[in-house]
Figure 1: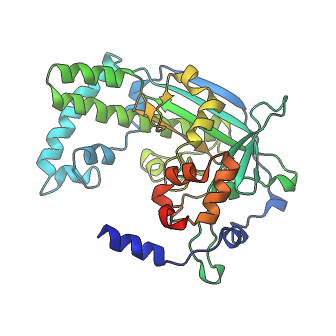
Figure 2: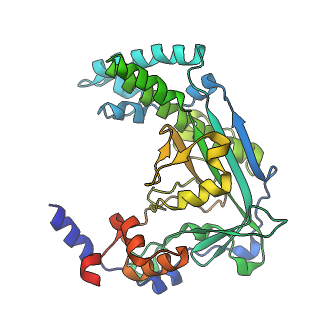
Amino acid sequence: MAEKHAAQQLQKKRFSIVDARANKVQLDWDNFEAPVPLKPGITLFEDFDLEELVSRFDWKPFFETWELHGRFPDILKDEKVGETARSLYADAQEMLKKIVAEKWFKPKAVVGLWPANSVGDDIEVTPAPEKNEPVMLHTLRQQMYRENNKRPNRALADYIAPKETGKTDYIGAFVVTAGPEVEEISAKLEAEHDDYNAILVKALGDRFAEAFAEHMHEKVRKELWGYAPDEALGNDDLIAEKYRGIRPAPGYPACPEHTEKGILWDLLDAEKNVGVSLTESYAMTPTSSVSGFYFANPDAKYFGLGKIERDQVESYAERKGMTLAEAERWLAPNLNYDPRQAK
């Protein structure tokens, strides 16, 4: 089945990277005025209110941790899994009371907002405007064939004003964490052979991290960047992403290459500021953490990169200072060719 699927992917027609770039997202930059952040640079948040974060939980992924699938709260009344879901939910509520009352976790966040412009498929960020020392973020472009160019071949760089427009745009980045306490408490429970509650703590820690990411994005839109000060959305609308802007993360469909996290970490000094580090494979530690970028353009939308060709991988490797083999290793799930046969 895997071989058949791979063969089908390889047969799909793709644009060359030159043609894909010619079919990029076309925005009206002549009439574009970028919202200027009200609080540019880096902002830290420490020991955030746990109760406020609980009110922002998206419970659907919590149940999926336990292989229980369905919409919340409907899953609690499901004929097949409702009884199990209700029992699990009751246990989670009981533990949440303790977490909040006894302040088990100490969430922290760091947010950065800086001037930026796109340069081709990359984004030039100027974290220290007074020194004019730009940092380059690298994005990837869809190469799927679009008949008659009916839909653009997107890259995240398309949502930042091109440098040649002469207009200053902005980009943001963030790292939030529920804190190392999640893993410490879970490890203690495992040592006591209480595997159920150990998993429960981790699952709730992940919900705190995701809720914190959602809350910080709202705070950015309304206060720090301030381009949507009058936004008034309920939790369901926030979960459904009915707001302006996106927060894509390295490793996710629009930007699947994880090493960009290294640049994000340097920009935010994340290890020093919030105690979150990266492993050799660019996984976050503590694991109950979320990171990503902020795009404010009203036309910005999420997308999947899909499969890409060697011409783009060669360009990407050159721009990042990688060997082709290194780039192919990091981009392996997205390659539309077999590197062993392409040499």
